[in-house]
Length: 192
Image (tube, rainbow, N blue to C red):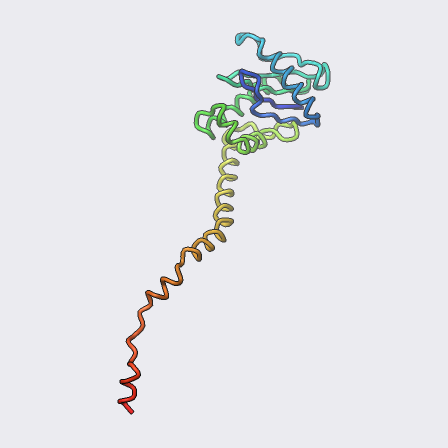
């Protein structure tokens, strides 16, 4: 089972945190610090598997990570998960982000946090892997974006109606009304 997913930059700042068990905020920060210290000390040419510290479930957990550019993608898992399977899952997650954001970078994770969490939610939920097929994940993301656009159109309709009414300049329109010339009162007296 996946216990936590952490994305941390090279300076130790968390860019994405997802814990699948409840931990206090202090404990989460301690987990991030310890995990970053363990991972950042390692050379890039060593194995990407690491026995975890003592914070998450003691001895039964491992850190599986990949270092891309300025970000560490770290999955904290128990012994029931396959290390190679999780490495592939990290690759799928990163490639999916890359396709969604067209050359993903750290700023995309900062400014589009909701979308990143949605993508992660399509891949992992409750600590269990849901989907590993990138095409299926992208299809679900596109479907969600389509629904959001439709909802934005519906929710914006009342605002557009109010705006249209506000833009109607009623006093000016009354002045612009062309009325037919009415006969004057003096012309009416002569007729009788």
